[in-house]
Length: 180
Image (cartoon, rainbow, N blue to C red; front, side, top):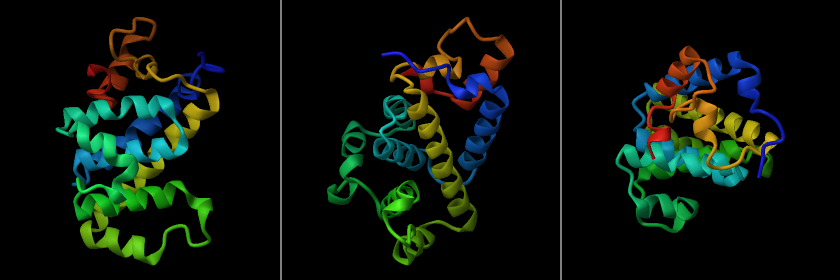
């Protein structure tokens, strides 16, 4: 399988920088890295983004995530493995990913539960993280970015075809993605 075109963030490098900055801001929020990666994985599953479904278990495992929880995230409501805070984050992630599924995309129930577990800065960062993964999913799905090629997009993993300064910036933003 081949992508329809080079990933848009490679064609418009300022977009890569903007997405990296956005993602980095969300990671400084106090929301656990494992929670953010579970939300990233779940949104990517919903959106059918094979590249992100392939890549997000890697940083999650690096952050201490277990195989059982990664395998169960698609059925998190029926799984005993997730805390109340993680369930609130996953519910918010699903609601913000499936905006057109209902008139009130983010119900008061979903919002209240998320706000119960996350203070305003963490909740804001969680929303930013969810928005960011949805942008990545849409970019990848649009061009049919194959799974297994995110290392090439990020420039990590020894890809020599990217300029060194750009590769270094990408690797710091995707720390752990190419490490498997």
